[in-house]
Amino acid sequence: MDSRAPPPGRPCGAGGRRAMNAANRERGFTLMEVMTYIAVLGVMTTVAWFAYYACVAHSLDLLRNVDDITRSVKAGERWREDVRRASAPLRMAEGALHIPQAEGEVVYAFSGSAVTRRGPGDPAPKPFLAEVKVSHMERDAGKSVASWRWEIELLSRRRARLRPLFTFRAVPTVAGAR
Image (cartoon, rainbow, N blue to C red):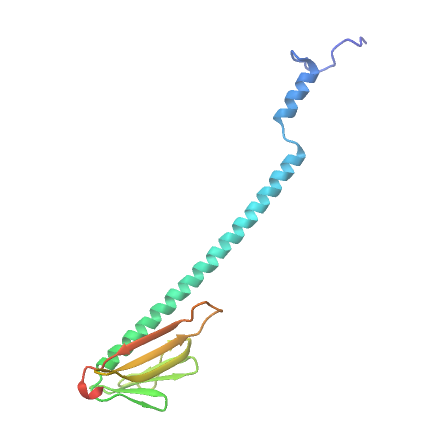
């Protein structure tokens, strides 16, 4: 065999075998580069998943807060309507607010972690506002107008910067009910 004969296979290009190997090295990826790219992709994917789950958790907390605010405001508006419809003076007895109306008496009471309401014709109190930490109803004697105030604090699901506090005020429309 001739030592000057080209090796078997395809013939070398214009620059010879050395030029072909240099061109191939510049075009391809090494195994280390591929492993590095996979590791970087894994880290970026992990960070993205943590960010996604944090956003989902905060979104659910926001929905719960909106629900708490909505049900508290609806309860407060119902309480204000009952106070405005009073036909005689309101009275506190045994920790419950008694509101006499033309149709009968409405009673609001707080026990455990819920506020209950017994309307005219109801045989037993019904749950009115759940998950309440503190509920306090009292007469507010102002200089010119006497009103009633209801302060509630809802139970917190976790430690928060702001406590869920709500205050509602109502003035009975009948002069004798004040």
